[in-house]
Image (cartoon, rainbow, N blue to C red; front, side, top):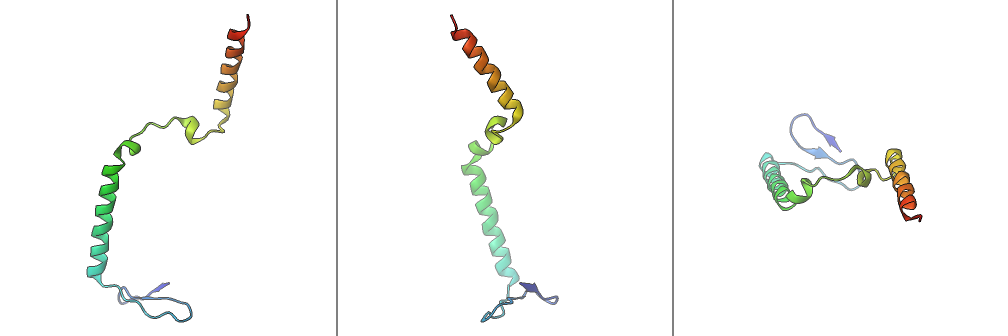
Length: 82
């Protein structure tokens, strides 16, 4: 896609494509719809966006967490030995 310098018309560089013009009014309408969609998603998924995700879920192969798990396994083994 190549933008011309005098307006917001775009010329698609492929076989059989034609010139497509963007009207500022359309762009403003699209922008309003996207903003409304963004606000709707923020409202609907507010609980997910504010979740406190533990680091071991985000990066399960982090070496510091592996060491912690090994220590927990050793403690479990020691507590079950009679």
